[in-house]
Amino acid sequence: MQTETIQESAKLKQNFQFTLSRLGHEIRNPIALISSELQLMASSHPEVCRFEQWDDLMDNLDYIKELLNELSDFSHSGTVSLTPVNITEFLSTIIACEKHTLDYLGITLETHLEPISSPVLIDRIKMRQALLNLFRNACEAIAAPRGRITVRLTKADDCICISVADNGCGMTREQIQKIFTPFVTYKPSGTGLGLAVTKEIITAHHGSLTVDSAPGQGSVFRIFLK
Image (tube, rainbow, N blue to C red; front, side, top):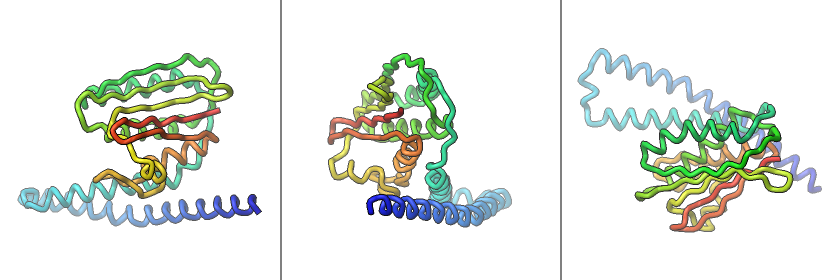
């Protein structure tokens, strides 16, 4: 009975992701046409760019494009192509790229990476996406000066742990329970898909993603991989 329930849940999840993929594809085409028409309009009649509503219109269009991109990410997040990777070098490269953004935002980055020589099987593109989602989530949680993000890589028993911690606003216990649910967001401009995508990617790697947080005390997200 339990096996049948798990299989039924997996089937429903697969159907849901397929529906999202089809829906995103159908919406993307008219949105692209609308964007092209607006660009032609602005080229032929530059005065429209000075209209009070023009910036709001373009902002909403950009938001729809971002939402469609995240829908696509979510619908494909369960498919991974695993290759052996030196996880310390892989994480160091991502951190080096992300540091420029954090420096610009005035956020201090601390790293504590344990050298791990044994290769880890990951999808480089999907895992990079998952980590960048955690970085972005941490940045958006930090609203005050003296912001800090700490990244750790450690080996624990038969797995490795990658943690991304921030000293931001933190979350309540009720928020933590819903944080990985698609379309649930506690941010004014959030889509509610970033952490859902991250969770799906880690699950597809046969890993786990946990979070510890409290209001006013920041959050720590931990990725566990075999």
